[in-house]
Length: 227
Image (tube, rainbow, N blue to C red):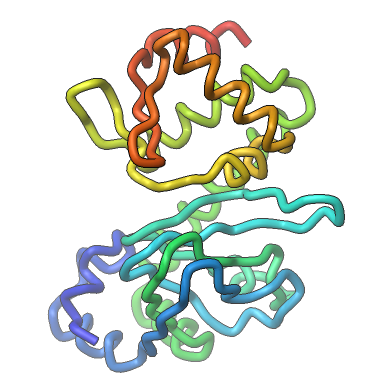
């Protein structure tokens, strides 16, 4: 793979061209179709995944429905937790939302890399802590908030992660179905459909070609701040 593609990842942005070339030689690249599973919860954690293109969901199966924990896209990485834990198994499953190309850094190469460049490990630990805080917020949302407030919190989180400015507000630049949103909120798809219609009628959001545009960020924030 082209070593310069690695520079798009914050973990590697400060490395020299020579070191990037060394890492690129260690990485394998795989393509996944839309909706294809990458790994499952409980699988052996044998690699770190870097997203070169596409969108990936990280989720857990609670036996009645999937609960989506995170949505990652180009420039993100995932799968690091199993490499840092003694159990060495995946704590969640991963599946593509769109056709995706992934770079895979195998565990033995990963461990050698962080030994030679400990700042990479520091970056991974900082990201892991941020993701743990996000997971704790998600647990709180699912247990104490009503669905409208959960939707407001989710839309704000998505604008922070995937938002780009648009003429009407902030575009959440990833296509998510009503079922994806329901799985992120821990509710039924029909509830999400009803909520989105309400928010559109109130002109908080607009949906254009399956992407959500947040038109009134202030009211979303006020709803969250009132929690």
